[in-house]
Amino acid sequence: MSNAHNAAQSMTAPLASGQSPHSHGLLWAAVIAAVALLAAGCSPPPPPKAAPPVQVRTALVQQQTAPITRTGVGNVLPVMSVTVRTRVDGQLDSVAFTEGQDVKAGQVLARIDPRTYQAQLDQSLAQKAKDEATLANARVDLARYEELIQQDATTRQTLDTQRALVGQLQAAVQNDDAQIAFARVNLGYTTITAPFAGRAGARLVDPGNIVRAADAGGLLVINQIDPIAVQFTLPESAFQSVNAALRASHDVLAVQALERGTGAVLAEGKLALVNNQIDASTGTIALKGQFPNPQHKLWPGQSVDARLVLGQREQALIAPSAAVQRGQSGLYAYVIDEGGKAQMQPIQIDEGDSGARNNLVVVTQGLKAGERVVVDGHYKLTPGAQTVEMPAAGGKGGADAAPRSSPPAPASAQELASTPRHSREGGNPNNVTSEVKPLDSPSFPRRQELRGNDKEKTAP
Image 1 (spheres, helix red, strand yellow):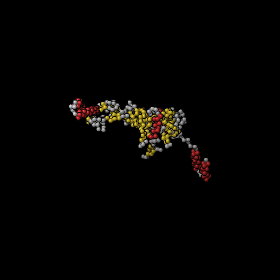
Image 2 (tube, one colour):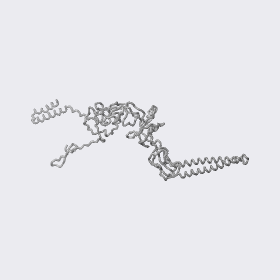
Image 3 (cartoon, helix red, strand yellow):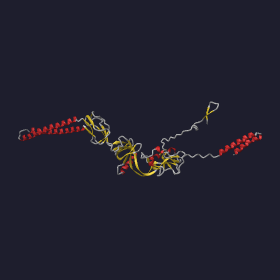
Image 4 (cartoon, one colour):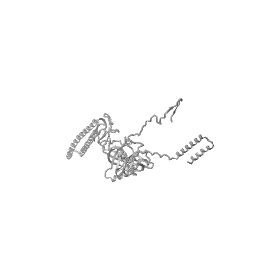
């Protein structure tokens, strides 16, 4: 104010030297304007506008018994698989199976022209009959020579020769028996049957073609798919926990086959194999589980996740996997305090279970049972930010919504895990808002026409 007083004195000084009253009024107007400006500059600035609360969706951390699991990527394999081939050469007469249908053990699959092999069998039978007749005659002669030798009517050499002939004919009959058995086996090979029950694949050879035992392709492939197997791998670091669980458990460890992407349990079975060595090139160990598959949910060649259950963890803290965030310092989660403010909390989870169970994780450090954690809306949060529970689909809410003194009950971890993400975001999966602006809004400047001039200008 002293500056304003000095300015007033300096402006009134010329009045004594004969300045006009009109100039004196202008000076006083300038003094008043300067004082007003100084007074406005000395007034305190208005308080900043409070930021609107951030809409988030939360879930409760629950404490319950959870399985100790290890999850790996696996492939479905048939328990048994066989390529059915012919064991004799010949023309394929008929096919007695339907592609893609189940076959039973011993069921006839195909027939090869049997006439050649039937003829070979008949030939062997005839040769045996001939040799048996010759043998019978030789035995009669041997008996006769034995009587004559007692009467000194023949020589000892003749008797010995006849005995040798009988032995030769007996061996010939035995060889005939072997030839008959061989011919019958070959004749039986002309009828091809299923070695075990399974699912028949595509027919690889049509009737009328000449098939040979040396053909590599075979006639068809049969896979046993009930039961069925899943071969999967776990990292080398998981071997000690698997080995300890095998020694501690009196029963065979349980294995679950999960659908890739959704995590749905397709089948539950037992661990059938832990490979006898670790693959040094990949640092993994191979395991195999066997599953009952009456509904054929598992199919050979299918890629699944295999979850090996090692035991149970009592009083485990369960949280939705969506609550876990990764930063420069590691994993963290936003915890909502009683005042509705978000606090960043470092956490640790069971990294051994790489596949979250139904979108849930086991928290080993950093959270407590009953705490509220943010599962949706992280991208707008900062530590200490005020939050408000995201309204349900169709509810009214927005950036101007005030924080509730008693927020709605957050969803449990299991309920949230089964809720689609677009449903958690207010029913708008793309979060797209549209606004139609009136033509007279500031975004559309008015155009004014000047009288007497053809030019137009844009109004400010």
